[in-house]
Amino acid sequence: MALTVREAVFDLFRQAGVHTVFGNPGSTELRMLRDWPADFDYVLGLQESVVLGMAAGHAIGTRGLAVANLHSAGGVGHALGAVFNAYRDRVPVLILAGQQSRSMLPTRPFLAADEPAAFPRPYVKWSGQPERAQDVPGAVAEAYRMAMTPPRGPVFVSVPVDDWDEPATPVPVRQVYADFVGAPEALRELAEALNAARAPALVVGAGVDEEDAQRAVVDLAERAVAAVFLAPLSARSGFPEDHRLFSGSLPPVRDQLAAKLAGHDVVLSIGAPIFKYHVPADGPFLPDGTRLYHLDSDPVQAAWAPLGTSVLSTVRAGVTALLELVEKRDRPMPAPLARPQARAVADPIEPASVFDTLRPMLPDGSILVEEAPSHREEFHARLPITRPGGFLTTGSGALGWAMPVAVGRALVGAGTAVRPGERVVCVIGDGSSMYSIQALWTAAHYRVPVTFLVLNNNGYEAVKQLCRRIQIPDVPGTDIRGIDFVAVAAGLGCPGRRVEHSSELADALAQALRADGPSLVEIPVTAGTAPAYPPAG
Ligand SMILES: Cc1ncc(C[n+]2csc(CCOP(=O)(O)OP(=O)(O)O)c2C)c(N)n1
Image 1 (cartoon, rainbow, N blue to C red):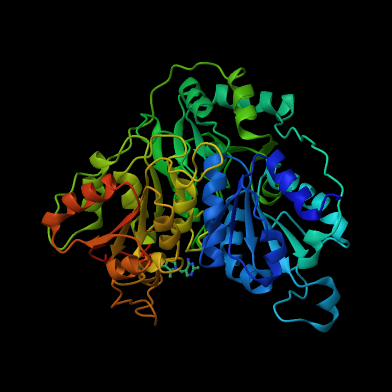
Image 2 (tube, rainbow, N blue to C red; image 1 turned 180 degrees about the horizontal axis):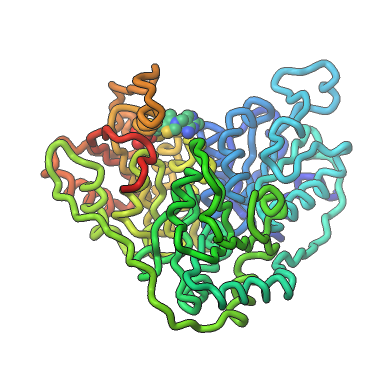
């Protein structure tokens, strides 16, 4: 019998090294799902944003493509917040969405998407529903190449359900070599600026971690004796945060960001949107006289950046080339980063003391996934990220990302079987956890080594902080009380424990970190009284 669309697409996945499909099934996917190939795992997520987030965590962990199978219009709709995140965070997820039979489409059938290709735009790099069944494998191949070409990102193919059984021709293997180094004259200009700088700074964005370029960036910082900042609200780390040159994160507020860079005459932003703000503020983008360079693969970002000279290049290749041109300098080190005092654990429990307690307990090689918006600064100050790939969060701001990303990241194992990987510790707010709490079920089902620490301050503290910043006393809908997180976790098959008193904290953390599967610890913590992004000093 001739090859079917379905066989051609699975062959394509094999060629791409993909052996896991994350999904949530329905009638419009049945012909794809039948006779499930023995060399593929189907990882079930109980809601589509969970499916997308798990696929993203897996893609981040494998540095490859992940496939998410979503149920026609409704499933895609559920996943869109996570698609937005994958797009902003440049995660290559190939979304295969179900669609009703072509024969039924003219009469607007149950479940069908009216304009499937338009639905996820503009947050996919490519999207389409092929005109003919036999074009599906080619469309999937094209989408795959788009997803994996820097800047990477999600792509979307809508497949009418009958297409899977139609005849197809095999899709030839094609390689796209996607590393590229910036123009030599641009790199020379950049190197000369760094060589001539009095006090250079590097701003490290998620692209550094994404391309595993941390070693090269450390070499560059040490050669140039440059202060290193993390880009505002970065989805990843990218520099060892215990390094003497590490100077903290840049605030996502225009005047505060400029103030933090004061004194640096040359700034090189690597793999980062440096101008990512959260709240409006006036003032110049940069201190007076500071020269800015960007080194990144994204032409769109190079176009919208309000200032600076952009050098289009993939990050690792560009930084490696730059290392040949930058001279070893011998100048005074930048001021060391002030570290906060350790906070003793007491009742009521302060979030800072949770981080201080956790830090010495973290197993070597742990991966921290954070979605605890009001605790972010304290988290970074007290839990410096030191390993490449050691930190993940939402770079877009859409909550509901961390839990499934943590599960997908922990599912990364050797070979094709779903096997546990490294210990993942997901530090999450009570509010954030509820956007995709179903991820606990998949975590329990696959016994992944994830420790969920729910910092329960009974509400949306970050929203209250923003209110305080703009002197709005109160908005509705920011208190959440009455959720029993341990009971919720238990209901989804995940063991949990609530810390009732500070004296139990260390033991609860130790026990959760030792568990060979997932576990959840609910920690009641104090809420703050500070506004968001208070001015320094
Ligand atoms: C999908 C989505 N919905 C709403 C928001 C707005 N929002 C930002 S922070 C926040 C509160 C999160 O609460 P929690 O996780 O408990 O953390 P806390 O702010 O209390 O530290 C909300 C609702 C968002 N960013 N994303």
